[in-house]
Length: 170
Ligand code: APR
Picture 1 (cartoon, rainbow, N blue to C red):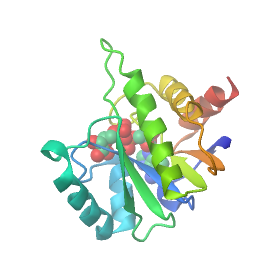
Picture 2: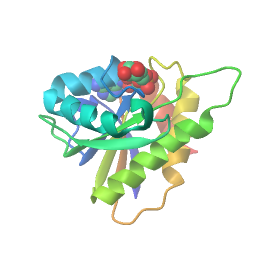
Picture 3: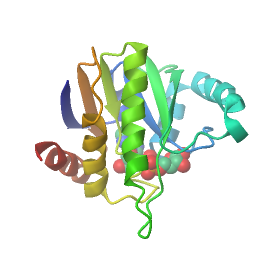
Picture 4: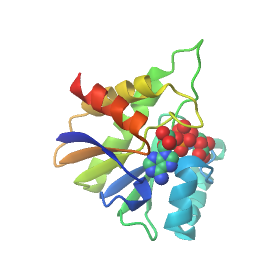
């Protein structure tokens, strides 16, 4: 399985699966979540609503992942995961690694050959980018799945790209 990092916009990425940095409410937001819903169209939100209705108390537990189709996006599916909010006092690293592990597992179950991630939790959720990159790479490397050929980290700025390239070279 090839792991690599590239500068780009996840909504323009043609991987089989793109992963959304969502929130437990699953009804959209800002950042990459807002961009995916804006570019993907209402179909994605409709499917999120149906999934939400079946979740305990209507919320996706942080670290878990669910899947919808991708609406008007070039991808085939969107996997939605809710990352942990950065905390200086509580180590939530395992929850962040779980976002990557569970998203890769779900993508493999779908038969995807390629998965593209943003830097989960490293925006509005405040996670320091260098550590977000390390947790991302560790989370993906912890999963051994057949058939999945490629995991791509699609980064929105050069600072994020440098952090992920450093984490991948460790
Ligand atoms: N493509 C790729 N990466 C993007 C894009 C995009 N189109 N837009 C933003 N990003 C980057 C940000 O620059 C950041 O590095 O994605 C990373 C994650 O940032 P957020 O989208 O803010 O996600 P997160 O930090 O996990 O916060 C999630 O924000 O948008 C809300 O509904 C979302 O409540 C949830 C919270």
